[in-house]
Image (cartoon, rainbow, N blue to C red):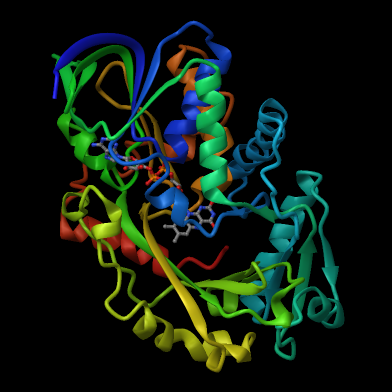
Length: 409
Ligand SMILES: Cc1cc2nc3c(=O)[nH]c(=O)nc-3n(C[C@H](O)[C@H](O)[C@H](O)COP(=O)(O)OP(=O)(O)OC[C@H]3O[C@@H](n4cnc5c(N)ncnc54)[C@H](O)[C@@H]3O)c2cc1C
């Protein structure tokens, strides 16, 4: 392949949702600037296209909420720009509490919804049954419904960002692999790729599960590890047709309708986590589970069946798995890279990247342009765990544990 040397204002490594979202906002706010997105496969091929894509607005971690609200806002903008609908499914979310701990957590969540002026109300078990006809309600102590919550097609979300970014001048290159950061002492000055070097004033690592490899080149131990998320899609059944999204913290599970079927995910007892160095460049070559997650499901199925008894007999048609970047505190890991100039890390998505993509895109576009970040990223600080080795077994296991203890959607 011909090797070239060129100059851009910004280079983004990774054309997943985060990379495309940053390119969208940057080109919108900085017309005339040259931004190149490098994607070694096709855009959004990895975590993004595999997501269950709950676009959760109301969370116990309040500082995620403004980021998610921006996602909802920008979807409208992009639909107008492209003259197309993204067909976001605004079916609402029901949170179900069947233990004292979950009731306390739900009450807290309701206070947060009120604080953010988001509609939310407690509902009876009869109403819960109507909103999710497959749900067994006898053990429910309290449930609440938030009608504005939605899920989307994650691939469409990513490609809407990419298409709008292209219309605004972004140069999105597929089948181009970033090899290494080019450094000049303590400053990142570009990226070498399989087709040449691109020098740039700013470089963003948005390489999903592979991000720690690039951060390490700049001497940064990026605190995250690729941890598997997995879910199943059942065969179709009329009971699922008009269901809302359901969050079941007492089963550490969530569910949503999917084309007349039910998509449901669990937090397995032992989450699979691997070193970023061991993941092939094409994620479709990675075997996430030899038995399509059946062993993991069997370990928690009784707990899920308390709310979804049909799980014992319904046929499971699809198994989907992918990697998200998890951290021990389940907070994102992102921001301006510490100790290196001109480097940014849009990484460590903790399984919430679809929901927060709008805010992440906007935040990085502003920071790259030298403006203040409009959001509070203090909880996402890359240095918060001190010096860590992201490739060590000890660290990877810590991140895996954080996911297996997760209760929210
Ligand atoms: C099963 C599953 C369910 C999920 N469910 C939800 C959900 O319900 N709600 C939610 O909000 N989030 C969910 N997520 C999380 C969400 O998918 C991610 O947060 C989001 O997709 C992250 O986007 P990203 O751009 O960081 O990563 P990715 O989409 O993985 O993109 C990274 C890109 O970088 C590219 N790349 C890597 N190395 C290089 C290189 N050297 N050169 C060029 N390109 C490179 C890769 O090919 C890839 O395309 C889920 C994730 C999974 C796996």
